[in-house]
Image (cartoon, rainbow over all chains, first blue to last red; front, side):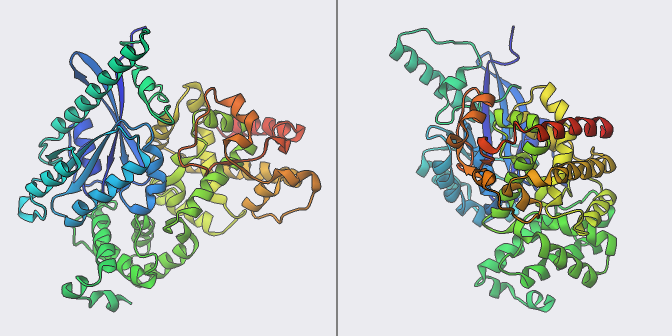
Length: 212
Length: 316
């Protein structure tokens, strides 16, 4: 039986309330923007399949509520995440400062080898900018992770950022698979979407749990 | 109280971060609360202004709680119905008196309600309960939105008001919102089980049910479920009795019915339902009745289950 995809990646969007996580996701999954969004309560996810190096990659992207007190619920979904987008709002200083807290949160709850990326969203609102692009870049360098300014509204860099994160995850996985193969010497199942199950850490069933 | 926040200057806000942060959260949520309705259109319509005013006043009224996401959802339908700011404020405040634990920082109440929902599910529909456990969904997190804001996002305004009015009566018993949640879940049991939904599909399905749920059917089945539980009242362990507000009973045989923590405590259940046991996402927040509880084997529960099947056919 041929699968509709070669890989399943679970991604997660986190960041303060109102920075535009849902809008970024909506732009990526539906290529649309709606200014009458509602706040996310609890957790939700969207699916989009992309192609990288001739492989079909199904992205399952989880969207979370931003307010701190709901983290007990949202962190439960960190498990099994292979990539995390940390989103702040360039017009909101506090949301930028909190990126550090969100990173600490990831370190506590997500797999240690999860791929990360920082997004400075709402970059169409330059007149209200409170965080310079340089500061964003600097923070990203500090943590050794990638950074892009995006605008869900103007459809700027959203597509790119998801492709970059997916590519990082894929090369990380490919590298790990190679290592595993050379270590064990035995045949590993390739070209099979259970790849990510083999590679998941800890609980391990997060990515494989989906039968979608 | 309105003057308390209305007279705080920008300069003062700079030295009052707790206030400033709540205010900014309120602003963000006011601008995304039911904007599709005419009443809340635009940033400075009467509806939007009043929504903002009441949330700001409530923040001062209950500063320890302040503003938490979801409160604007609770307020909006009441405001649109009552319209008058003062009347709406007090109605909202009284409603919050009842549900503020949902919004507390610790989130203990939400965790408990979700856990209690699962325990009740194991009584009213053990097979669905086992199914959820097998796909790691026994924490019932998919029902978080339901319980946090009393199903506000799941129904239209007119249905929400009917539902809330019925829940405000406190009848037929405490924690009745849990039965409403179970009713929605059980109405979807065949979709979930026949399509072999996993954790993520269940969440997606539940989120997609919004505005597509039949309120009358939901209330009827909720009441049926409640009555089914009450029908075996004398056999219920104390862990369940306290959920539905029944006094605890002393019965030696029921001693080990107390809730137990952790996966290791119920090996049989694990074995029978989950091929590869894995830790619960939140750590140890899942509790299930002990396997010695007789619940899964007692003829009464089987009878209950049959009765439940009847109930479902009747209501589906």
